Amino acid sequence: MRTPLFACALIAAIAGLSQAASVDKPLATPTRTTAAKKAPPRGLSDATIEQIIKTKLAKSKIGADKFTVKVQGGVAYWDGKTDVIQHKGAATRMARTAGAAAVVNNIQISDAARRKAAHNLTGTTPRAQVKHADPVAAQSK
Image 1 (cartoon, rainbow, N blue to C red):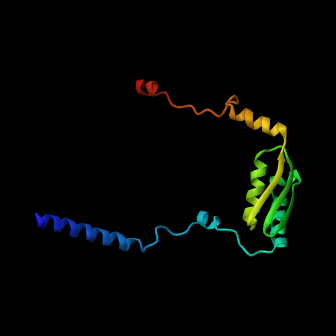
Image 2 (cartoon, helix red, strand yellow):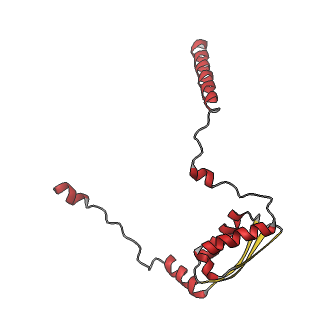
Image 3 (cartoon, rainbow, N blue to C red):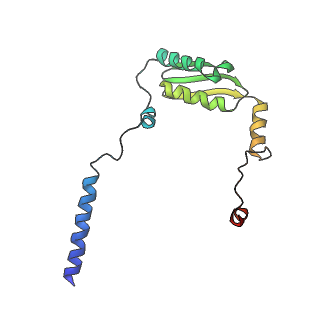
C-alpha cells in the first residue's frame, strides 16, 4: 500500500519540477501590439504634456470640436462642447497617452448627441444583419 502511494508522490514531484523549470522561459516574445501598449512616459513637464496633447489634437478628428486643454501638476483639464459622444472619451485617452497622470474631463455633450445615443441603445435603429446559410436548403442540394 505504501509503494503505490510513494510512487504517485514521486511522479507528482517530478511533474511539478518539470513545470517549474518551464516557467523560467518567456511565454511569448513581445510583439508590436504589446509594445504599443506601454505606459506613457512619466516625469514630463506640464508644458511638454500639454504640447503633446495639442499636437495629437491637431492631427485628430476631434480637433474640429475646438476643445481646450490645460495641464497643471500632471493633470490634464479638458473643456468644450461636442455633438459626438465618443469624442469625450477620445479626449481622455489622448491625454493619458500623452503622459498625463490624471484627466479632468469637463467636455459637455449636446442634448442631440445624448438623444441619439439613447435612441441607439433602445434597439430601434436597424443594425447590420448577417445572413446565415439555410442549413435545410444546403442539405437538400
